[in-house]
Image (cartoon, rainbow, N blue to C red; front, side, top):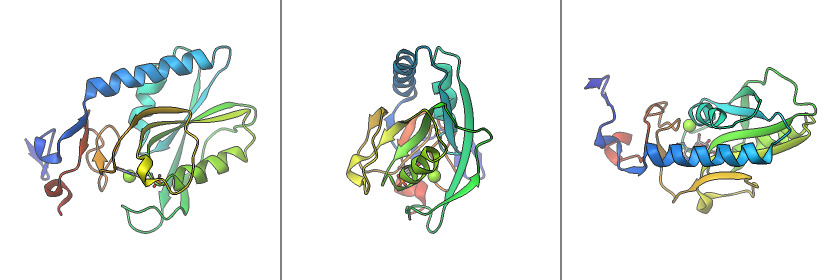
Length: 187
Ligand code: IMP
Ligand code: MG
């Protein structure tokens, strides 16, 4: 089936790096770990739109605690495939972070520049604690050291899509994480 040239979930997108079951199992492990670590607290899980919305939605459902959530949307200046580190706030949080136990939920740590900026911004709002959860990390790409508290998977330096991750706003709805093929990227 083809809609606007987008075949789903056709192999032509690229080979599967992490299949849906592997992702779900790991997300449940992270949720269980957070549940243990935040006993007696009400964690506040912040998703970065649009990229971490899918991971965030699954993660909050695997945490067995009272919790709250909020959303922030950021954009960057310049080319879509490169990070300048200059972050534009497109949508701010709805709620104050004062005195809260905040978990920032990211899809993938690449250079680390975007999350570094967001963490500094959140820290300035006076949370009681601030930790980072990221589903994926490409350690070989890091330009700035960002401490990761909860990590799903380390992956090699390949461009991946699916489970919230996009290429030009596509493929976010794939249940697997795939390595984008040259054909699908139009290269
Ligand atoms: P950085 O860590 O500031 O370089 O930027 C990380 C952001 O770039 C991520 O949150 C993603 O939105 C995007 N990104 C980095 N690598 C990939 C990838 O392999 N696929 C899709 N998006 C990516
Ligand atoms: Mg993106």
